[in-house]
Length: 119
Image: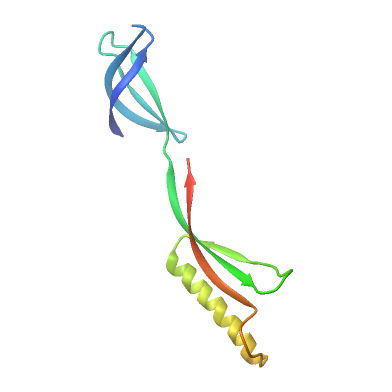
């Protein structure tokens, strides 16, 4: 828990008062709780939710023709995303080599960094 310094409305004094208290989190919501300096009654101030951001890496397959099905995977680690894409591209190249197909592959795997926000 951390310290809070601010104002809240005291229902007993019927006035806004400055108070010091502790920050608590219940079900993802933050509250500042303390006592009124004038009358000693409990004060609670709702502070709201904490917004967090997480980086994820989306590996997706680009298919170079219409009607193609696109596949994707989501990773939280960039190294894993890069390895997955490289492995998939190597797999496609190996299939093309075995089938003796020359030229560019019809699909290519790449990854993109995306920030996901949650409240």
